[in-house]
Image (cartoon, rainbow, N blue to C red; front, side, top):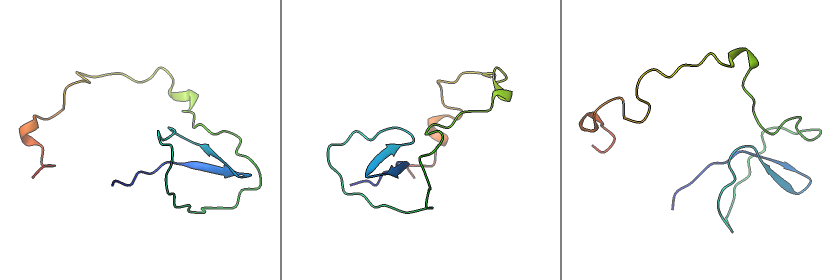
Length: 76
């Protein structure tokens, strides 16, 4: 059994997911209260700044790993 984390905001008995919605039918959850909010959030999705629009560039191959598999240390 693996633990997974998802961000959500709880408002009036309902959970509003901030990112992806977990694909589950039933789960045991642990709730951590970070702060008391007075009302619903102004935006549930984070938006990047308009100042960075169109300034990103892809350099090289984005599909292949940067290092050969033999150099990975995660399985050792």
